[in-house]
Image 1 (cartoon, chains in turn red, yellow):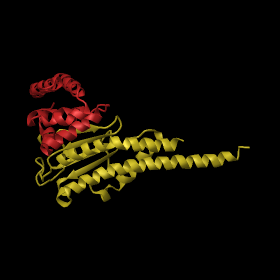
Image 2 (spheres, chains in turn red, orange):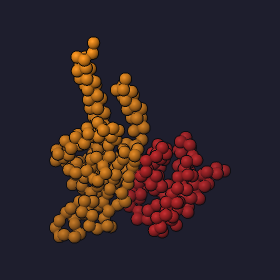
Image 3 (cartoon, helix red, strand yellow):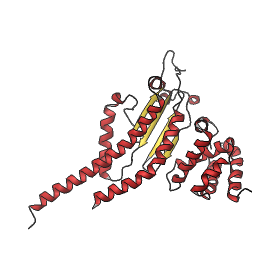
Length: 106
Length: 182
């Protein structure tokens, strides 16, 4: 069984490509806020298991949102660093390079 | 008194510092995949594309990693060069002056540092420009280690300078005011 917050996060990540393909900055910002709210519901201890259950593509998209979140300083950044560390550990340097190079930004 | 409290504060801040540096390190490791790329605009020229910014297709998405409002890192990549800029934490007026003087000192000697930029990017305290030629001569892992260690040391130096300044000021004030006491 998948927990409620995990299902919500997966749904948001599945919807992300539509937002990424568009050029609407407001839609992207709104979707990003939803993703951050979904991430907030995970405690730091659950990050490891959550990342392990992700596949490559949702993992890449999540990493893009993590970097977007890190652009602005807030208290959540402490847990965002943990997300970034775990995602990089699982998916490797390539996922960061995909964040840098992908023209379809989050 | 204040200086001991500030030392304790710095020690606790150092613990939240490590994840930030780790994030910068892994991102820098990814961004530093460079190759030689002669200029597409001028024949026989080879320029760092991140500085020239002539062709948009050669530039990567810039990444900002913010630890606090003041402390952040900007990593701008391109096909043959990367620009890394750091904004150093400047808590009060004294630290701002110290940081400004210290970074100015370093930037005037940027040739010695090879990878340092003479002027920081707008909004940041210090910048590095790393090109593919640097990576051909130097080991990438050690270069990343150097930058991270450099940023740690700058913070330690500025904190140490501020503490020394405050203690010296206190001693001087005490000696001076002794004449007026009793």
